[in-house]
Length: 121
Image (cartoon, rainbow, N blue to C red; front, side, top):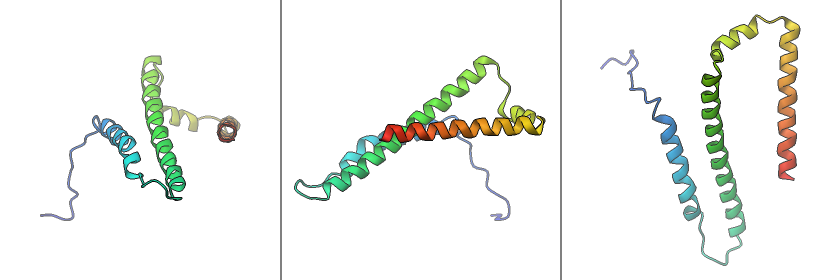
């Protein structure tokens, strides 16, 4: 056995998103059972909050995966260039154009954060 050479593992790129989705769905259905307590405890409120946080995180990850999948499909259908090519073209922009693009992204991030805060309140 040669420890200096890395072992090549089979790449399961096509099945990996389905496995992650399956794990998230299993966690969705088993989490309420795992957080279940006998009635009458004051800890139930704390545990139900952690359950809601867990379910919200799982929902967010599922929606994020769905949005990424849709983005990739629309990207191919619209005939846009690959992401690596777009990054190379971004580096060829003039400095003021790069700065303008960065400020627009920051404004979009700020609006998203404000929207998330409004949704929570």
